Image (cartoon, rainbow, N blue to C red; front, side):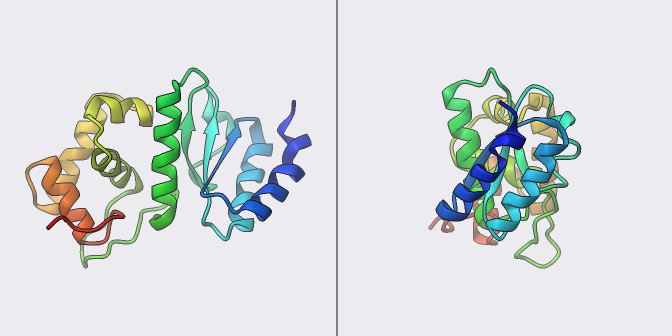
Length: 174
């Protein structure tokens, strides 16, 4: 079934329910347009995840407000994780653009915040890489950047620092 056919029903549901996360299939330019409408109707509070093997077909989904993609072959655990991360991110991040830093001089990319958010939920680098459709080496590169920006030397301290600065949702640890 084509997404264009379902678009009015999707938008009506978004307006009625105001969900935290909306999952859409990748179907060319229709998806890009629908992402924009979903973000407008939800006043940019809903994160949009795309499902498909070739998210590049959707144009530039991140620039249009998509939080990320889920491959068709994803496990239930991976889908749950992607939705949890998108819901958490939607509460405090501006998707597709660098998130504003709460602390002066500290600017984290959306991807760096996603990596830390996954670690905050207990994921290993390997699991985070799968959830974000990245290689483990790429996740480790993000961690090196995070460590440098926050002037820390381990993941736990980085997540705690990000929370205390208001960069990640949650209370700072005591």
